[in-house]
Length: 431
Image (cartoon, rainbow, N blue to C red; front, side):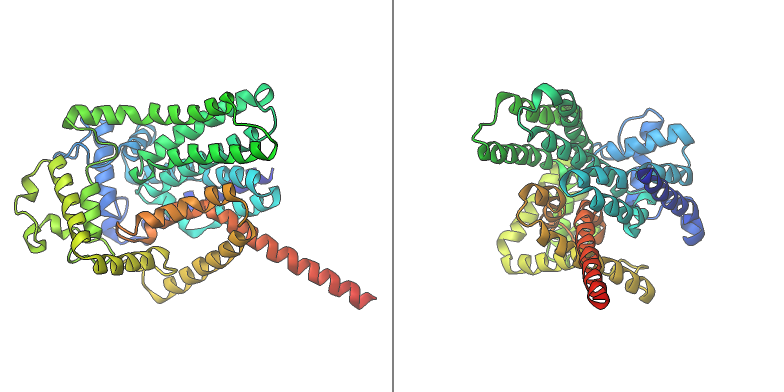
């Protein structure tokens, strides 16, 4: 009953925001797009919707396909109209708090999980991510689902002699952990190494539990972990093979990684995105033939130039890393149009409180490595990636959502402590 109400609340807020979006956007954006990436995703989705080649007209491996494919599915359901697709996407993203509840229920406690689900349902950034035509909303859904499956696998497998009784549940959860990890990786390629890390931590966590009981990790345990990896490969391999066919090279993510890396590591880099080097490469000391290279050559060239910049300018790279982390962890937005006083005050209050309670929750679980890995790991991993790539709040928010469980734990502990103190004070006064 409570979960149903939380689902209703989360969905209503997100759908309501999607419905209201045209009323708060400037006329040029009403019913259309808000970010340049949105227009690209929409263009690729239209290609899939109409059964055409997956290309923007010039590049064939510019973006991984999961989010455009999701948009194309939405188009088949409600038509190729951005506003209607946004509403459907918002409704789907209403599932995120419920999936996160499943994570927190197994790793923390029932009460903390329910409190966390309420926080996730109300969390303003989660609501906003769900209504914009950007990959962050869908990515947060895959991440929440994968972590819920991973928590289920570990929770079931750490029981003694789990396989006679829980084998079907573990197999299903392991399959979901791998499949959803694959979908997340084909939404945001930066996630691709995470499923391998999940398998490693599952193995280490089980080894620790078995060691405490004087046991060894069994072949059945290994088999369950292998299912995670196999399911991940089932999702990703078609994309890898397709890239090999169309480019003649093995491409695991996309061929935009070189441009993204150079965006964060170049002589004019400031820590925020500025892709003008693609238009005027000579101004950055790049080859004037950059635009005429094929996308694989261009990707390799820009990667090489970025690492050459690192080699020649270690001090500058360190300064940029600090700037990127300041942007990544900032409690106020810096994007144009989002820096008004009211917005900054509200964001500062929300994110500042989130950080304080999250740090307290982190302290409370500091001796539980698997909990730390699942709840804080995605956020810390993404932050470390953006020591190289540009820093932005936008990249932080999807992976901050699992850490809301730590926020809920910190808040629950504070409320419990206050309640106990009031109870003691009341008894003292009556005494």
